[in-house]
Length: 116
Length: 315
Image (cartoon, rainbow over the protein chains, first blue to last red):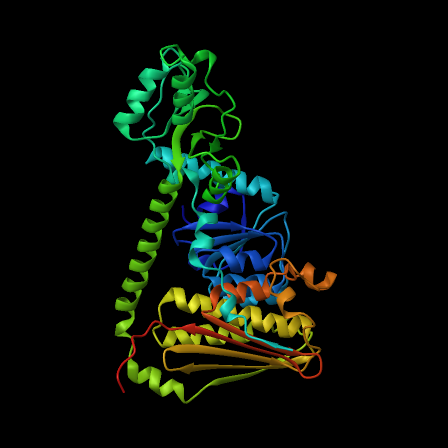
């Protein structure tokens, strides 16, 4: 799955980083605890979170995330968007709740598996 | 108060027995019997296969009992060795689900004083998918330890192309930063710059990631919990050394602060997604060596060392 597929799967809006949506996703991490993300994430993963502070973008950058999805329709502050732009990390926003977002991604992954 | 916690690291095996699942360690080939056999038939099989017990399964491979060598001896003793096992076998069978970690298997083997555990498909299933003994667990442990050792070796080989001249040059120029207390917005700046710095040195991705996370957590600690301080990041021979000093108020109990989940964070900090009590434990997890000195008078000094994986050259 590529980052741009998330737009369709989660009915998501791209807030910034349109030029970097073509990357292949290796893994997903869903958490509102940045410490957990720091402890367990893998390179080239997509971070799903309900947090919107600039620290989310910092954490994503430092752990090698290739995109952030803000769930529950939350909008990050301008500083966070600015920081993401400078580090080339696309930000996406979806109205889906965290659980629904994860479920939809899981369904999509299953579909991909079948089509292989 | 001053303590060096680097000696306290969990041993590898201790960590592994929590990580390895029963499924990975068990033997999938299960020698078993249906209910309609005699003790003598089982005794012959035990002898032939050099095993000390077999599970008794029904048509669907659900477990209904177990017969051990002890049960066979008792049968000889009491004279029912040629009778069908149905009325005599133990029906209270201790099993273990395949998704449990091997530490649970070890505990059950010890607690119930049995030599083997039939492995069930899941917690609420009686279907047998394997069998596990202490020697299966040991075998698996050895295999995992060996593969870890091989990975470390590969890494050392891969990293030799890093320029030694470059490392020598940066050895003399440490990075220095002021870190303000209670300044959430710029927190992460040090870690970000440090990451770029090591990227330019051509260090492997995995090691850069560990350096970045250690820096970030240490930086966050100064921002969240102290009156401010400073950080120095330097390259010393083969190591990245991260110093984080703050002006106080100090950690009353360092041992407690290193416990995963222990936190003194305020609501404000938690709202940012931090303060889950994972900061110091995360640093400990990613650093090769960690020293923390803390005093309620002079503040906290943290020193974390991460090996860069460059092979030592004779100078």
